[in-house]
Length: 177
Length: 449
Image 1 (cartoon, each protein chain N blue to C red):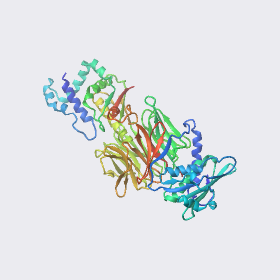
Image 2: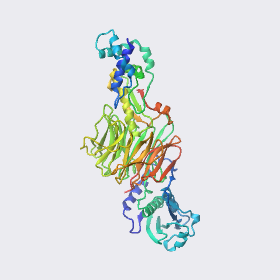
Image 3: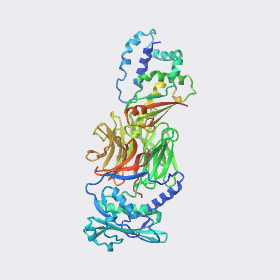
């Protein structure tokens, strides 16, 4: 299957799933959209292709996906809740794991760095968890499988006040139950 | 504790009941309470340009053995800690009278103090009588005097009340030495973190741990009668708002809905809590919960983060933080849900959040982004003028003292969470020294009623 096509569709989904004021954060993927839809051997509509692509890719690359799904943390930009495109494969793998096992439950824990007020950061952590949740739902996980909680800045993993500490703390942790 | 004289009796009788209850409560929660070592010690980092010279003469004692406590020492420490007074050292006193009639004012003019406080403690049965008189040295006249009858264990509180009376008589501003502060203390590193909700006297003494948890505790808010605290606890694995009665230690979850249950703020009449809830999509909106009957009114409806509600002094409006305009700013909306669109209140700079209204209704305290540094600022609600009061980089959670003249807030120093104070006019600031733990989210109690 065409990997660029998958990325394009996911990139679109990622942008759509973000909330708040948006910037065009994914220009390189968006720019390929014309080329990709033109190059597909399947002549059906773009969105239909996208869905089937993701599913078939899951079966074809299961071993790789299992490794990817072992990563359980997604990091974010400062004061942003958009999921970066580099997490597309990771989230696709988790979505497959969830849709392939309806008994599986996933808890998404949203976190923020210490800048900004504490309760506002609860809002930011919730936004981040919801952005991840929406991407998993789009890719086949069911709503009943996913719960979210926001800890804001209350549970940091890095305790300094440098940018590198902050990067580690702006995150959503995926926790299977 | 009761007054013997007719003077300044306005707020005494019910406050005695309050403090008695508090002491009873303190006894009940010993199992929860950490040893009563003072975690906080207040140190003034910038005082008044001309602090008022005052002499607090060691109090006389009429009873068996030694005096049960150093009332004058507590009063001296309170007044010095306010940054507005310059107490004379005991060794510089030329006389140590315990009664007004024994004062030779020339002895006090010589050491250049404006005021002299004298007093005495007497044992009367199982109780103590604490009598004090404050004199204006140059006018040689009595400014304020009173006599309190108390149980020995109430001596420290009674001393704070004397300091309050002296402070008010001289500055015209009500003292806050007999109030308390609640705050969150965090110790340890994951996975061994401990979060504590603590209440202490305003001078850092008499700490009690109200709640201890391995999961975060945040956003404490005093009920207007000072008898309950609302707060957020993650003890169930997600956020819920609890209300705890100090006297009994009993508590209940008042909001435990799916999603976010955060940022409780008590209404001035004590009947409602403003709080933040999320919907199925994770949007945070400000709501008002009527505690009796559990009625919920949603005030905001936007795909923005709307949170950190706080009440106007008259209880008619709720101020809150929203990023609906892009960056976080403070907005105001009718508390009864009758307004569709809130009014924006803060305009200076691109970040103003976590509003708190002063009890007198004149000021709005916010966290303000001052060129990349988060600082405490107050906005005059009438003129709109904003003044930055703190000088740190991560200052947060400002809370007004009940006299509106002072704020306490949290910041980070040397990688640790600490508390600091600043006067509302920005002239006097202090550091609350703490031992070891991260301390944060201080909230000043109302006056005891």
